[in-house]
Image 1 (cartoon, protein in one colour):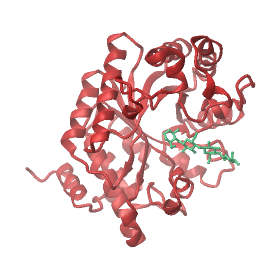
Image 2 (spheres, helix red, strand yellow; image 1 turned 45 degrees about the vertical axis):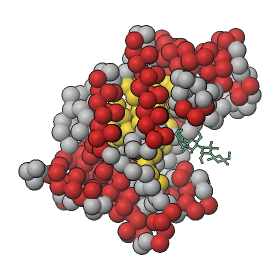
Image 3 (cartoon, rainbow, N blue to C red; image 1 turned 120 degrees about the vertical axis):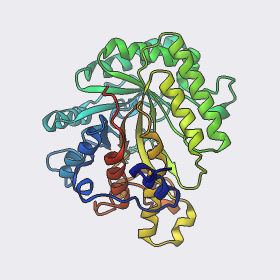
Length: 365
Ligand code: G3I
């Protein structure tokens, strides 16, 4: 195999070495590097991250061309209890800041079985859907129809271990309409926000583990049903909450990406971060950060080979406020994002810069 930049990067990834990064790529902004190949780079934010007084607004503004509300646009964040009026103040502030700073906004997420209004977990009939869920989708997608360029319409619809032959997660939405809730949500979103690109979003789809193969199977079956039914779906979001414990086989991941591409979908990495293996804790901090960067290099060097990949979003910029650190007692110092606790560039930032600088250009979306 000739020694090309990409083969060198792949070799670094396979050896868990930090990728080489040129001085030009290191000094360029990630959003600008991504744009050179027709892609975007973005980050999950809260309204306090992107206020004009925010401590790190220059970083959130400088590095990213896309912002994604990490949690404040979810049904349970907008509506405390079923029947309450929605509180859009935090989301309106994010929208206003994005407009002032020329950021595109990715909406997350209209339908998710977590972070629901109190009482929504008991919804179970088609009448409940018509009374509560349909108006929620129409109102939120409609309110931000001119501010959001693409939506995660339905998040995490697949759960093979819920026992259904369709490998779909049994949620209140499934109880209300059966598997057709997904199609109905996309039709409602398309009606309310006709110019937005509409995505199905899910996780645990990249590694060679059997349980992830079942998730890939369920995901592809659902996508095939939606596309055959003429549902207005434009893309698939791979959350990419990567994990150094799992076995990666690029042939398996490439096959999955090719199936998504064959469906004519655009693909996005929507929530990138890295969970370190418990064994990492015996290593030095610099070694741990290098291994996390190598995990991103390994998986994203394959994803960025797909011309369908439209963008990459990290689930936060700094480990300091990563959700991963709230997940378990032994993860309170997880090293899984492009910037460290003090918002200094970590090796993962170099890995992303190097990946964007070396990837082939894709057709624009
Ligand atoms: O900031 C407030 C704080 O002021 C308040 O005192 C506290 C108690 O209510 O809440 C704090 O906000 C919390 C927020 O995280 C910031 O920590 C919200 O309650 C909490 O619901 C929110 O959790 C978010 C979670 O989704 C549920 O929405 C996480 O930040 C967010 O990282 C996580 O993201 C999900 C994706 O949407 C889907 N994929 C998995 C991913 C991780 O779970």
